[in-house]
Image 1: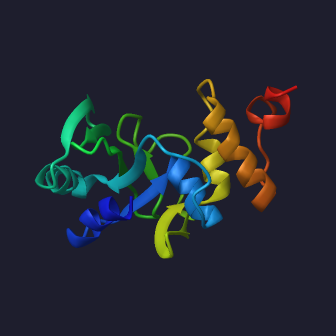
Image 2: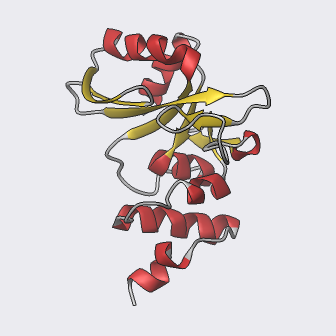
Length: 168
């Protein structure tokens, strides 16, 4: 996973981790296996990000332009890119939504840093992670991730996403 992040660092492309790896970054340790690496990139760097992945042997497997692409390499590492447009205040909107309307997908204060494999990485805050788990039917791994955040950071997790209700 750190090897994939270095692809972007070498290309001078800023990324933020969300999803399962983003939760693990906040916790400072890997808590489970991950099927993919979910990354947020700024819109002006999206073409460069896609080229960087392709230059390192990743192939496009899912195209939901303009705001989301998934790539996989021959080692079955999967990277999901979410493209966001930033306003002058640092709030960001997924390009597949109405940019600049309503609450931002990624508010300015929704970014922080964490640790993976002893390296500092950029990721979403615990509260922003929780918000990004709403709006779809959670899988067991989603409930697991949110329970880890609730236990460590005492963030509010909506009832339908809580582990104690899924295992009752």
